Image: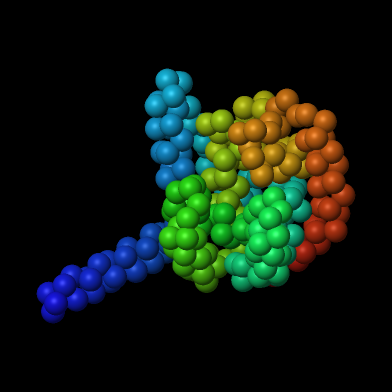
Amino acid sequence: MKKLRKILLWIVLLFFGSTILIVLLYRWVPVYYTPLMGIRSIQQKWDGREVKCSHHWVPLDSISPYMPIAVIASEDQLFTQHNGFDFKAIEQARKEAAEGKRRRGASTISQQTAKNAFLWPTSSWIRKGVEAYFTVLIEFVWGKERIMEVYLNSIEMGDGIYGVDAVAKEHFNTRAAKLTREQCALIAATLPNPIKFSSKNPSAYMRKRQKAILKQMRNIEHYWKELINE
């Protein structure tokens, strides 16, 4: 038992030491590859498809200023105000699930970034627990601007497309810095399911979501500008 406790102690120390180190490293080093990219590549290979992984890291100041505002409007309207978790949204999602309603996500941009950068996409209580741990770490170590930078560079935005610069090139034949307000809103509209929904060939439903996001962006813009100008 003494030997087992020692082994477990070393495992715990190794986990915390390695995870803290990589979070510190990613505070400054670009995240060029994520677990999700690897998993999707394996799935493509397994399905007999050509492996595609389009990803170009760009700094936040080389991304259209409308893009962070669009994803906040679409995915997490309290992003600039919370500390990583939207407990009201979590409680609402729990209540709706208990009532048998259609399940909806309650993950913040911070939680999604933690998942995208360090973990796997399949949902489980174990992954949720580790995701919460990484969310606390990145909120403390990175701050909101870096979280947004990693999010916009790592989020899945289409089949084999990761990050805003890649989707700008693939779907709009431009660069991330030159995306218009409307294009940013359309990209953000696909994020609940970027494999099902397309910003290249948007459906009427996508156009409706784009319009709603554009309206919300006007209400959120000053919060983001206030944050980055602090």
